[in-house]
Image: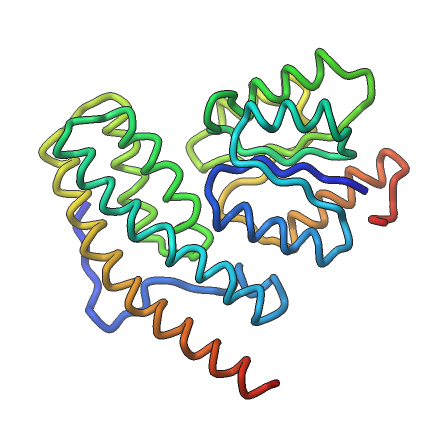
Length: 128
Length: 126
């Protein structure tokens, strides 16, 4: 999958999570995502190195669910492709490239989300 | 009203839990299919929401076990990914009541929960 988006483009959309209807809950779930998922993305890279396709399939599927509710369609699409290829251990060179692309895009999204997390924290502090 | 939510992705699990608690449901959570089955037997929830791909025991197996082991009609909502349509059909054949595809609207999930509860004459969360 060819990735085309500029560096400033926001890689997520919080509108589904905003249905939680309060900023504290939103902050809780974003924080949980930022605590867990960066480590899991690194695990994807390790699983490719180890050619552990079954674990890669399962972990890509799980991360995809979280990324999808953040409406990060590009990363979710890549994870879906990784999941499908890892399930059948096919197109290994393409799979390796996609995991690297996920890692790069996720790093950008993580930075954007950490900024958003800080803004929400400040908003909450001001409202107290 | 007690709802058991089985989902192995921590953020999704927490998100669903927070939303349902706001609607004043009692929420039991688990990230493990085997634990989900044990908690259903032990805690007798009024409704179950389960992901399909779960560790140890899948969402489909959870549906089959619940339908085989309990006489009480517990509504079950399946959380599925886009490419799992065939599995959703299988879930319906096993006795699932509804499904919702990820990513989903939390408000829509609540509507589906309320609809299933009302079909069983259970309208109030508390």
